[in-house]
Length: 307
Length: 165
Image (cartoon, rainbow over all chains, first blue to last red; front, top):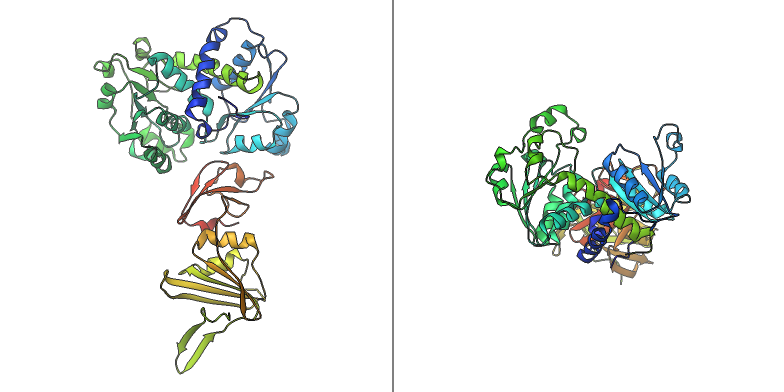
């Protein structure tokens, strides 16, 4: 059962709660594709994006509108009360009075949890610095379930920036609830932080680490590619050392398992060749669409009278 | 019971120096060797204090190998001060002395959550900004101490003394 007031971190989700979100998302998928609904008619969702976002912001907006609700936007920080030095705490108290739920993306880690302590309405974390992005993880899990038929006991490789990439931290944790066999593929300088690896080990999750993608490609059910994020590197030279270390092409997939699916939170840069888009393995655009479905489920659960 | 067990003798040439029992105040015993100065920092006792303070460092201890002892005269430690000490000296014992007698003796015990005592080591954590909040740390393990910031979830294990507020 799903009884949360806020959606802040995957650490707070049990497997049963995740399953309930995915089940409702499956029910709502036809509405995400355009079937009319007024499940959230009269409700208002406020989008507070203090950092740039395209797909997360637009998919939340689409999800709300597909369910018959309305959306208000903070808009650019310049010219708003933020530029006058208003605290985040005051901002969410004020906007929480205008809307039925808040979606927040903010450059500081822990900002969504702070917002939840001051907001009178539910808060959904849409990314807090290098911290959490739980709605991305839920849509990743939904993609795996839809495209593989199940999540249990799959062999999954997380590839690329495992140090700064917040999506892979949350996803690795969530996959551990489903008995996944996880392979971490990254250059040594971008390995997954020790705290997260030891957390996975303590849960009995099978975790391997390597910097060689070529062999791993042929032995997994899910390849989760990530972008090496230039903006997370203080030193451009360090970025250049690792920027193009992994690149999937159709040739690199010749001996892959038939059921292999390739996912990516997008935007991609060089890590997946456009030629891969036409292979039966590519799922990243479906994954992006499922973001609407899963966010509809979360909004319905939080402000639409539950599942 | 007089506070004699924590008395320490020191030889300095032909003269003998002794850290004497105190009449009133607090004796903090079983501080891990070398941590006494951090305990003073936690207590807000700097070089300019007027308080009478005795510090003994790195004396032999059956329990700890080496231990430090701090005696603060005319001051009985408050509970939140005791909690702070537990962060860096989890085996410490606190003795409240009145008229040379130990009237209270207890070990330190970390609560499940520490509020407003230790700042998060993550410089990008929202708790390290001017937002109207106090730092909040969940205590995940007590010995050795493992804290986790309630906001950004970053763990804190080493060099906790450096992050005391």
